[in-house]
Length: 325
Ligand code: PMV
Image (cartoon, rainbow, N blue to C red; front, side, top):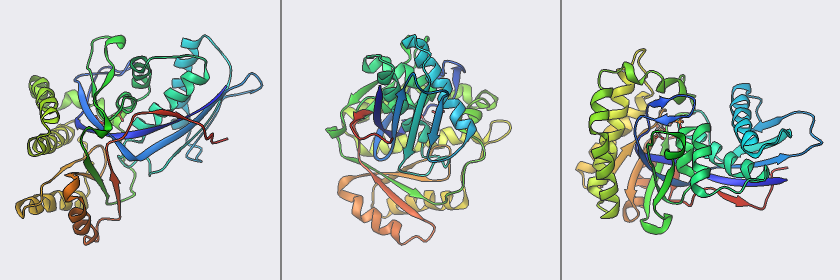
């Protein structure tokens, strides 16, 4: 059977950074994110007895590491479906990969939804998030709609994602300002292994549950100022841990820092905008819909901003009819 799915990337307001079980990808803390309408992966999967080998074409490239990770995920699904049939996968993103725009989130969410269905499984949304999590942690948050919480959990079955609010709940805008196409030198998977070497990591775990509760509350009350401050503080906290890990992880470029300083300036001048950053140099700017065009005008004046991608909250992963092969 051939199935195609489309899934959004997501931006974490409260970040996932650290695993307590490497293989199962159980996180050291819960996280909360928003799905992004303009950063997505489309993936077609077919299991067919006539295939002589597994084939995976990811963004038209022959990246063996990416292919191996995808086939490992397919093996989990084949085991669940009790099949050994070979697979063909074609996957494409509408945005650059490996620069910190969370392509593994949209990628493994789309792969999970398409491959489980193509293997004959009919999983619930919760079950899909549990499978996606094992491919890439943040992928579990790209399955439910809108604003999503990944519940930490202690076992594979209790570490899943759930929608807190649908995509049409609050028209928050995430403007991604791309400052370079440079690929990050250390992947999230590799970087996360170093987390416990930061002296600040223990402190983070002491207060992270409080931050999760605050994030839920600010979303519930649509308190943009409080949410923005929390999100910005959270990004800085995660990067402080990265920078103080050994060896240190430094994902920012001078242009990243320049934009962070501009955000502060714009805010002082009355434009309410906040930033967050993942494992890369590009900056996500969170703003209310009413102020979006003012921000875009300002960004267009900055030569260091190479490209702008405007996102609204999006639905989670969906099955679609148009196959890629
Ligand atoms: O799912 P991974 O292994 O790509 O890790 C994602 C880590 C961050 O993007 C930095 C944070 C997050 O919660 O998305």
